[in-house]
Amino acid sequence: MHLCELNIRGWRNYEELRFTAEPGVNLIVGDNAQGKTNLLESIVYLGSGRSWRTQKSAELIRFGDAFADLEAKVFSEGREQTLRSVIFPGRRPRQLWRNGVKKKSAGELAGVLNTVLFCPEDLLVLKSGASARRKLGDMALCQLRPNYDAALAEYNRLLEQKSKILKDRFEQPAWLDILPEYNLRLCQVGALLISYRARFYESLGKAASVYHGQFSGGAEEFTLDYHTVSTVADPFASVAKLTEDLQSHMESHARAELESGQCLTGPHKDDFDVKLSGLSVKTYGSQGQTRTAAISLKLAQRELMKRESGEEPVLLLDDVLSELDPSRQDFVLNQISSGQVFITCCEQGRFTKLGQTIQIRKGQIV
Image (cartoon, rainbow, N blue to C red; front, side):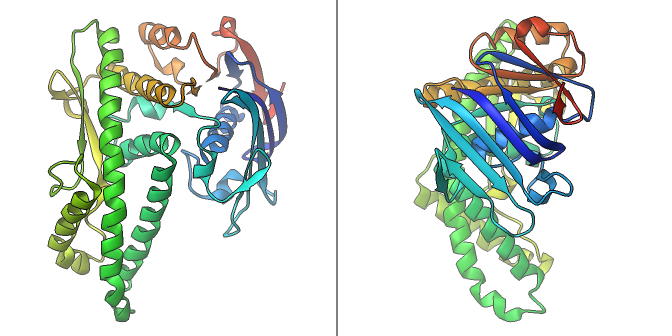
């Protein structure tokens, strides 16, 4: 699997850009704020239908332009395929195409251009808040499991609507009559999310432990623990049982939710914790341990996607190498001997022996 050609119009700071990518390593160099990360973001968006930086479509469109248009030729599943996304500001829905056929959802793009992104923020994800770790898992799962992407979108929509009911309960008391229906559906969809997440995090933890073992010379044992609502004793239980568990937890928080006007329970508060030899990285991990564990997670994500599709996903390293010491740089670089890789950095001349170099200045290839 690799990106062959990318065409961009009206995306972020790009008026128009076209370039042909190498199937191996593509090094994107340029000063800060020239558009290197924006370029990687367009690749991620084409493959997944989402950005890791924003949920607001207006922020993706170049200032003064009416829309953004992304198009790519991809070699995937043994043949050349095309992807296209046109994004509009406001409430006008985006348009997605796969091989010239218009699609209704991002889930229908899954599998054509799988990507694994690694950016400086990911090095600190194990020390960050729970939302950053949920985003890491959600971005991976949405590519691995199109049904998860649909369930997550529905859950977020229901959660937003329930939040409005609770917030406006005094101005619109009649809305409380439909609250039980929202609660039931949230539990049903939430049970699906938990089921997917439990299995994903189990596989991710096992794969990451292998990479961390190689990195640390077997000195530390890597484990990953998934945490969801307290009434879920077994996240691997049937979806029906998980639904019951979520209902029990929601019922126990019903009065508190009405008093606070907020949604207090559900898988939108899920988290995971990485431990090294039994000690939480978040609480006790050194900077070096935290970075090594984060690298192991990203390499594990790439491994899982390769196992699932049989093809190496495109790896995107957004200025992450400059954040690593030489030993960790070497470890990462030794893992990219296969598959397509895009690496951004500010230092021209560094890593140039790796592959094709593309210099970016003010949204243009120099």
